[in-house]
Image 1 (cartoon, rainbow, N blue to C red):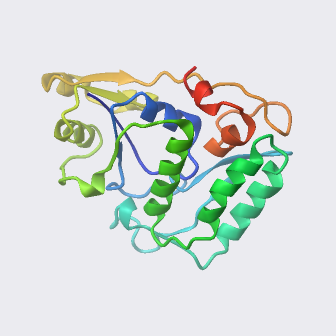
Image 2 (tube, one colour; image 1 turned 180 degrees about the vertical axis):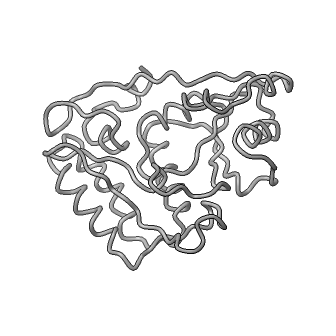
Length: 227
């Protein structure tokens, strides 16, 4: 049983899906605190002039350290949906596979979401299906609560999920206590993701864009993720 864990992310980059694809179970970590300025509520899209951030505004004033990601609400007083949809259409309308993907994406920019985590979850389900990823996913907010922070939290989630291997992102090297994992017979392996290069509609190549850049431009995106 290979388990991977990651916080919700808006329009995740390709490495996010690589981790899910290489796991037997993916835990959607929506029970930790929201991090301002992180990749949780923003990601990059390619434009003619390079790349731009697309950020979902969230309501954190006065509650940032008191609520988990699953409780964070989108600030729908801001017209973020219209702005994001306009940016996506303007910059990807000439991409070779835009007609298919624009049709699948458009509903997310017209349906009103209150909960940020729900938006990311629904998009993730759609993206996984599009990429042929069938890994089971579980929200940690729907699991029995576990104690701990950082390495201990990850360990306890792995134990509850009967993991034999924990697939960590490369940053896990900075905080995971591998000896403690080993005492519970859980191996720790680190993701070794090689970013694929593909033709982008604006010429040149900018890596680490949100997943829709790959979908709009590549004829067989799932095969590129298996590189």
